[in-house]
Amino acid sequence: MAATTFGSQKAVAAFSAQRREQELRHRAQVRGWLYIVLLVLLALVVVGGATRLTDSGLSITEWKPIHGVIPPIGEAEWQEELEKYRQIPEYQQINKGMSLDEFKFIFWWEWGHRLLARGVGLVFALPLAFFWVAGRLDRRLKLPLLGLLALGGLQGFIGWWMVMSGLSERVDVSQYRLAVHLTLASLIFAGVVAVARWIAPHSGEAKPVAGADRAALGLAVIVLVQIYLGALVAGLDAGLVFNEWPTMDGGFFPASQWDAALGIRNLFDNHAIVQFIHRTFAYVVWAAALFHAVKLWRLAPGSTHARRAGVLFALVSAQAVVGIVTLLAYVPMNWALIHQATALVVLGFAVAHWRGLAGPLPLADGSPHRIDG
Image 1 (cartoon, rainbow, N blue to C red):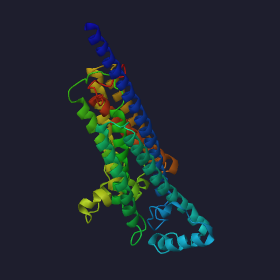
Image 2: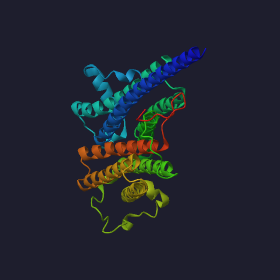
Image 3: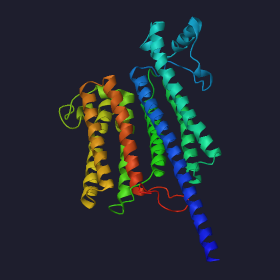
Image 4: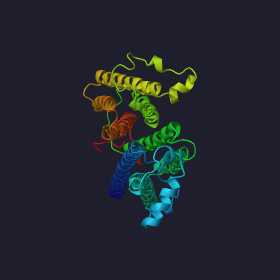
């Protein structure tokens, strides 16, 4: 009887171990897919930045989610697209007389950006459906991933809403709508990082202090705010005024540029003030990252959490240097795109750091998902 009981227990243990290995394998597959999504998202944001810097965003004046995949074919279709572009203020006031070859240059940037946007939707939705149907998706991940898919769909509408702002009265898109567009893209990127890190193995080290994960989350939030402020700068081309550092307008604050008639709108519409806010808030982010890294190192020197906080501070510092170089060089395209890409890298690492402190998603049997097994 005892031998039978022992044999049953051994069989149950073997079955549990098999289920655990299968769950770990499925998590690894899902993480691999999410990392691919992150790469495509990063490429999408960089191409979007290039589209803005080349003033290509208004070259396609219609929103065709399905038929827009196929670019113009033949001279007649290209002339038709150019004629549509000729009807908007940007052509009439800035690009009047643009040749077809010049139009093709800006068209291809915007078409490529939209194609990548459609592509990331497929890269996310199709594997999600596969993992779901194949039973390889933890039920606790389903709602967060569906939420990210919904945000991706919303981002498509936001993108067109942004383009619409430049088709009738303006010669460019609204900086407000551009900021919403980039911030939502960054939020989606952060969400994918959070889910991927949630199901990754963790070190198993205890938090250095009870509120360390909340502090790390706060740091990620202010990085996202800084990205929003940077989008306002981009939307206004505010990086092209006062290309000096550390002073601005001969001092710390460009007081001579304050427009009393704008009032509170100076914070969003005044080129100099918007640049001032972005560069000043960068000091806030840098100081917060430094304080966080020093505190964790004092509480748990040499720990995984402390080392990760140090890397985050280094990334924030590098991003600040890139921002200063971009400003002093009058925002050349290569440096501007590096600045935009590294902003996402900083955000992603900040989110991963927070998730590392908050801990992993427990396995189905309730055990922690640790690096050491």
